[in-house]
Length: 360
Picture 1 (cartoon, rainbow, N blue to C red):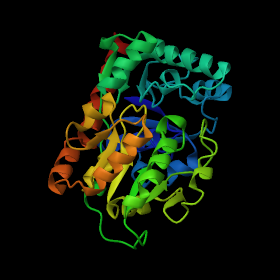
Picture 2 (cartoon, helix red, strand yellow):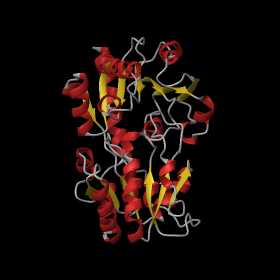
Picture 3 (cartoon, rainbow, N blue to C red):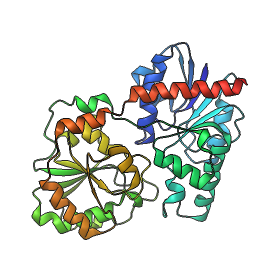
Picture 4 (cartoon, rainbow, N blue to C red):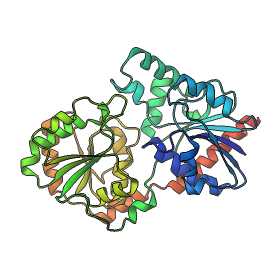
């Protein structure tokens, strides 16, 4: 089979993690297939497992969500491609071949403030609907996301397939490294978009800090995110010795930050899956998350929940979380229930299913 992949987001967090883990498994698993990866050729060549005889890199650096991507992707996709995989909802609308798309969430439609102008809202609504219209199969990373896609786009259940995220095996095999922070700490991993609820987390931590021995470390880019919350850093005034922004860190350093932490805190108002808690659990670390449906679906009773909308409730939960213990073995076992190998195998079956539909 000849497969084209929009790999422009290969180095992104979230979607990039999904893309890398799937490609790193299906490429060697199907040596008889030919993969054509469209993306930044320099970045693609840095991923050793993708340097295979059955992989061709096609340099394509059109910006995400741009008119240019809609022109370049169809033009640069070889004519013999049987299935095109779009790992996000921004499918190439002028491509007339068979498409499999992955929708991680519908935050652009469901969360106020992400698409914060009328043109962005119209674009998001149009592109989600085009993803549904153009895709032979839509893969979703949770049952919650499947329901949301159906709700906001009218997609039919029979068109969608469920493939969960997973934590890479390396998360359960982290070896002791350099000390990342002198004091005990809780850790947040993510961006500063409004739905990540970082403002309330910081306010709650400031309220609870006097009762906590743990600092709060925020891992992720401070800026450069579309829809980032302005003024987040201003909230740190007077707490610079307790709350720390690291900025972007390498995957190796991220693992050290998490495994050395007292626990991870993620109080998002909306997620399609929410991978950081799973990675923390794989490393044997407890997690405090927001009481939202997708987290109950993915994590069940293996983590602690709190109301993400009330600062005082969050502060109280942080105090409780600091004293609460979890069985490390059970955390690791729960995380191991999700496997990239199983997800990749299911994705192979979906590609084969889409190709069979093309042949009918």
